[in-house]
Length: 303
View 1 (tube, one colour):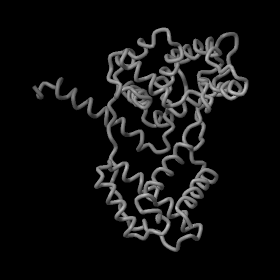
View 2: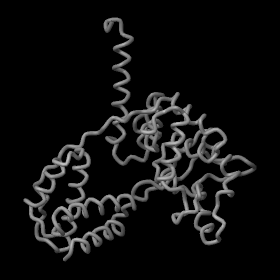
View 3: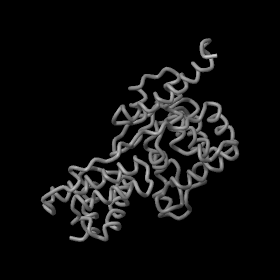
C-alpha cells in the first residue's frame, strides 16, 4: 500500500464522488505529497505521534495558521478515506487540534483605484471586458477564464434579452450573476473582435471556440497565470502597486463596494456564491474599520 497509490485513489474518489474541482484536487495532492515526503513515504502507515510531529513542523517552518489548518484538513480527509476503505482501523488525526486560522482582512481597492484601472485599459477591449467581469460580477478567476459563450444571455436585434450570466462555481454549482450596463457593453465590444484571437489550427479552434476568452494554449481558454500577468502590467500603467491588483482583489472590491452602497449581506453572499455566510462576513470587518477611522476623524470628541 504505497503512499502514491493511495493518494491517487483518494483524489479519484474526491473527483468522482464529491465532485471536487481541479483546483481543490491539486491542493489536496500537494498537501498529501508534501506530508508523504516529510514522513519518508510512510504517510499511510503513520501513527498519531508521526502526524503530530509533522503538524508541529509546519509551525516551525513559519507557515501561516491558515496554511497549517488547510494541510491538517487534507490529512483528516485522507485518513478518513483510508478508514472507510478498510486500509486502516484507526484515524491518527482524530485527537489532533490544529491552529485556528484567522481571516485576513483584505486590502480593498477604492472606487477611484478601480476607475484608474478601467481607464488604463485604453483601447484593449479584451482587458476591459475581463476587468468589468471581475469587478462588475465578482467572479473568481477560475470562473472567469472558463466562462463559455453558452453562459451568456441571448442577444436579439443587437441587445441582450436578459442581464444575467450563468457561472459554474465551486463544487460544480451554477449560479446566476446579474451584470450592469458597463459589463454588458464590454462583452459586446469584445465579441465584435473576439474571432481575431481564435487559433488558426482546426483542432485548437474547435476547443477554444466555446470559450468567451479563447486561447491557443492546450486548455483552450485564457489561463489564470496569463491573466495575472496582464493585471500586473495594467496596475503599473494605472500607477497602483501590482501586489494590490489581482483577480481576487477585484472580487473583494466588488463585495465591499456593494455593502458600502447598502446591499444586504445575504444578497452579497448569494452574488459571490459563498456556501457559508461567515465567509462573506469578512467584508463587514472592512466596513467596521472604515467607520472607526471616520469616528476618529469626524467626531468632535475625538479631536
